Length: 310
Image 1 (spheres, rainbow, N blue to C red):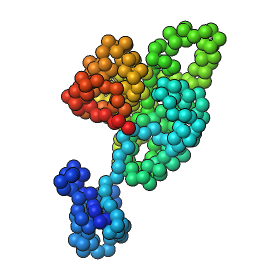
Image 2 (image 1 turned 90 degrees about the vertical axis):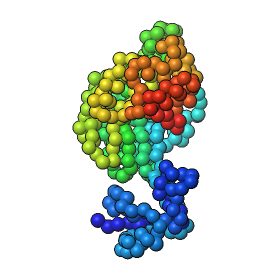
Image 3 (image 1 turned 60 degrees about the vertical axis):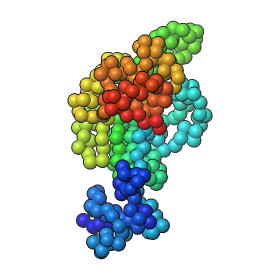
Image 4 (image 1 turned 90 degrees about the horizontal axis):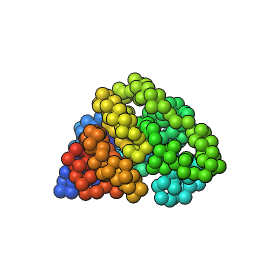
């Protein structure tokens, strides 16, 4: 297989050694197929691989691809789709009410092209459904797009089973509305049918059957967030992830209201509750987590749980 030689004025060979070392001046990296076969000074590698195709110049920086640790497979920002930026809870309501479904394959593919162009070669795609009744088809369409783009992806479909509109049960929320408004909300809910829990786990099984051995796909399980998942669902997600040797990725403590939900619902911090459920560990990453307490940060450190501030 032909070797490619990627050269630069500076080559970041060992990011873990920064800032004291790890950068080679007038450096290069040799790639054969999908493997780095050599790295070091450009003159020596040019002599070692005299027929290699050469990319870069003495005006470039050679570095590993960047990793986007929390993405939703979107190519267009919500501002481009007509939504104003706002508090999360208002923004979510606006999002589900106004954003129209896009073709999952094309949306994901264009998003990948933008990521690659900006230097991102690995992305964590926490997949929500543009059309809840079409979740299965969208998941496979997104994975086809990632495959066609050539990007590395950690992919999971979001799971939820409670609190669709507010941080309380749907029944309690609807009961607190005036009858006419409650009827309108119930009509709106019927247009977004929930994806049944058993169907979700059947989809997970099918995704692992289709992509479990793919060299550039790592499959995850993705609870939407503690406030949107019952304890029973969180436990089952943890159990299934452990069975597959898969990671877990979820939104957590993205807003002060979510922090208060944890205090009122669990009588303690949300991360503390997840820890008591046996949910946390080095195979878990929390998206955002900007409203953690110091104690919750210590729990993450002790359990090896990662945080993706996004």
